[in-house]
Length: 144
Image 1 (cartoon, one colour):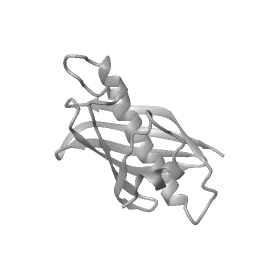
Image 2 (spheres, one colour):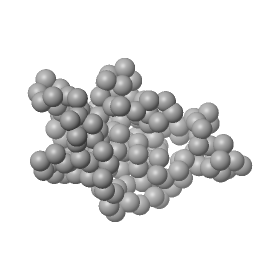
Image 3 (cartoon, one colour):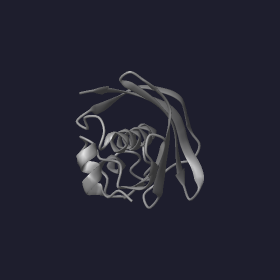
C-alpha cells in the first residue's frame, strides 16, 4: 500500500485538487489500483448539482490521470530522475456509465499500454462497488 504522504512526494497536486487518497496495489511499470474517497465536503458539490450532488466526469478523468502519474512515479523510483511532472495531453474513448456521488469509494485502475520517449499511454477505468463508472485512454507527457 502507498499512503498519501508518498503520493504527495510523487504528484504536484494539493488540496483541493489531489484526487488520489491511497494506492492499494501496483505492479512497477505495468498497472495500479488507487482509491479516491468521494465526500460531500468537496468544493465541486456546492455547484454540481446542489440538490443532487454528482462528481463531474472531468474530475473522474483527472483522478484516473493522477493515478496514472503515481504509477509512472512509482515505476521510476530507484531508477530515473523522479522529479518529472506528467501533463495530461490527450483523452480518448472516454465513457461514463454511472454517476459517482458522495459516499462512494472510487477505485482508479490504470495500465500502461505504451511508452514513447517522454510520453506514456494508459488504459484506465474507474469502478464503484465493482461496477465500472468511467473509462478512457489517456496520454501523458513528462517535462523534467
